[in-house]
Length: 502
Image (cartoon, rainbow, N blue to C red; front, side, top):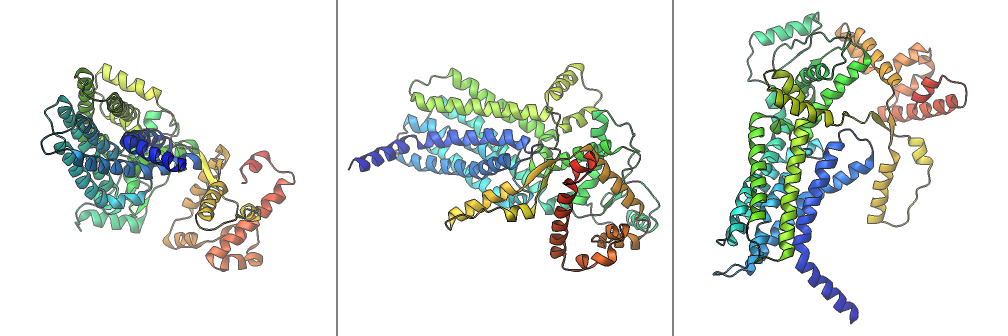
């Protein structure tokens, strides 16, 4: 009997505070997303990825559930009256649209999510309709109702931005944005001549004709110069991500500068595929950002000035937290906008900026984290994983959770040393020198270890290991590599080589 009364009181307590808890949880998830979304770009490790994945999947669901509860709660209002508590709760609906729009630092968790932009468009239409319904249903000539309008405008902008970015980053639209209208004219002739002759050493691609890139300075030390080069290469290599033709050779620069440029270039691509960079760094994106920030700031200022004596202190406090949280997210987004590589590129192309504006942006840039990737690579040792006894009792959900945690534990992140970078870069340059004709390139692409075996005169003895099925060959070489490393580590070995063997 006592247990029943306890659960009944618990249910009553949840029904009383469920909406407040849900909208505040939605705000907390947005804070997690905007913080970890940027950190994900340069952090290695599964813990951050797991928390971000959980927050990403939960954020939209929590906001949608909250809107559903709000729309259901409005049914308690009569035809001729509206409770003031429902008015202030309806004021939260536009904030949920803001949350559904998501932060600038993450729009999708994986590139495949961009293909679902039509679903997000439908969600935009439905959720905006629900928010407007809640707003109209609770309409009453109060000052608080008018404050919901600017927040609703900001929510529409945020949600619309996210849907547009998803559409722009989808594979079909991404490919379409790179290719001009079909025109079998002089450009096609020039391109085919290039493919046949291959005498030019410049950067060329398809879709926009021939690309000319200035030779890189071997002493590429300035961050601004490196960013400019990376940006130019990014607009060329976008065709690679769209499965189009690209060929480029890094010559005349050191391995450090080559990795620096590639690091920045991949950072640009990350921003295009996973964030709102394509719109927030555009002119109209700046206009929309100004409108959303001004609307939110005006609503917060007015909220602090109007009379709120007729509302409960709990709901007033919740509304104030939502307003302050929205302003905080906007300010963080603006700081991220000013401290990004895109802003540095924009400054390099606008020398006519005023001294005050240039000084402000430069100071913000100096405060940003000078890190674009983790400088680590994932490593998996199949033998170690198989030899460890990780049996778990139980079936179903428990077994599934164990397998997921096991997958996270198996991957190890190892730092990439300068020695390894230099070795990789030298090998790439060496292989590029050997691709003088099409037949040679075809042979290199079909190699599965023949080159190494020929070099160390072991081809005849170990040919069988590369003639089996591809997956079986990978496992064989993986086991052999692990055995050789164990043998080398037990003997004398150069410290630099030993530290990079694994």
